[in-house]
Length: 285
Length: 303
Image (cartoon, rainbow over all chains, first blue to last red; front, side, top):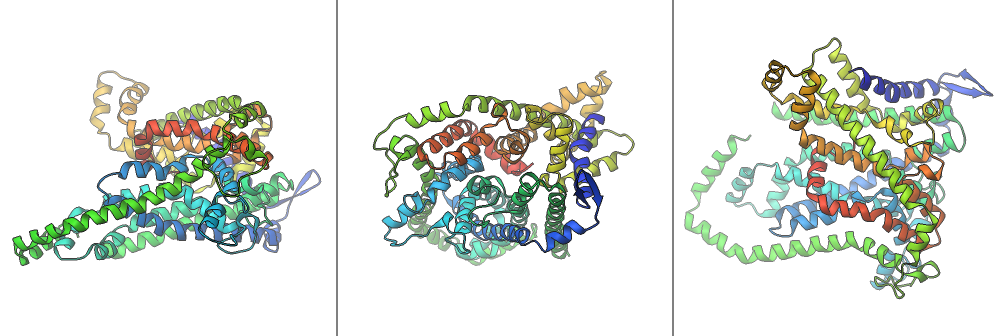
């Protein structure tokens, strides 16, 4: 028991403690000086930090708002087909296995405004003036943020479908039989039986999907470097932390960002678990 | 809720005469066929959408002229098929070195992670030692600590113990984790104590019991854990980016990212590199897809 626990202390607990400690200090020459919550206060008035935090949250919300409904619809359809389900599942899951870096390299060209795959397809469909995608830092579905949301949905869809499928298959068939005999149409059954019974699946995907999206780094770094080009429109909080520590060399400020990140993730986990558990209790009562 | 359902079902079924129900189902057959076709068409369009970027990547990577000028209308068949881009990619970046590094890192960290997860899981599930509850809580609590929060002190630690820019730096921080311990404890708890007692009566030591009885009974969760961990380590770029600076220590993913960022203008070469990085993963996936999909469904995606 001792060796694994020693590894845990050395590589997990100790560095976490150091992050918390460093966040309360500031570098003065070669010395460290205790400054209390000064790092957090200066982050609070730092527009770059706020933009990174805002980007992270916005990208996470957009990602989940698109991928959850889409994966539920596609998984329900996949669950209903008699033949061809397995190869389709295999295909949908393929992008997930490809590293986020490779996906980013491919999509950097897919979104190229002049000759990219997407705009080529749009032109073939008769769109006169297709969007600029990754070159356009403005907010909106056809700017850089919209593009990376499409990229994330394309990558993650297979995983979400797999989890929803597992949830669908755990719903007791008797409930469906009862409803069918009752004369409910397929859409009605889907709406009143399938969706409510998928709630635990939704909660699971919401928690894991949010935590994952909040920690987004690899693909956006490959596309726009640690600054999240263009115009910091793609800089997430982890990218900001990396840039602060390794390009600006401000380890203490990066530690403060790390603490804020930890509290955010903890808050998301606790809130979603509490919401989930309290609802379960109300139900069983 | 569950015992209620069959009762409800039979009560409703009695209301409708049997023959009428059959007729209703028979007329449904044509509609059912149309539904199936409709579903397959929609799902097929989605699948084509998933595969198209890959097809375009391969086609473009085989075209030498893609580096100078790309066709305005995307083409899925190179006008001048050649392996030129692949030759440039292989001579520009030591992709074989990257592959060797990635394989070493992934195999070593995954084997260690599986071993320690099973060992700690076994100790927490079946062992009795002072402070078991508190220690388990320690392991669980680490699930709440994101890697990003501790990565900078971890980097400084690696620097202090002189592991920076070496393959062990990519392995040792990932040998123990709360998730693996938790998953293995849950699974080992379900193994009846009788098995362990019987082995103990036969004179087997603790480690022998662990190796010969516990591990073989945990193949499914271990496989799930392995798949998740392999994907996680193979695709990671943030940590290798932080701790390696010599090309001799790059992993495939990091090498690809840096090459992709550097050769932003040479479209053909960049996509050839991406193809080389993806290809082995895709082959492994086609061979192992059933296990991979089962493992992902069981273990979640992230460790």
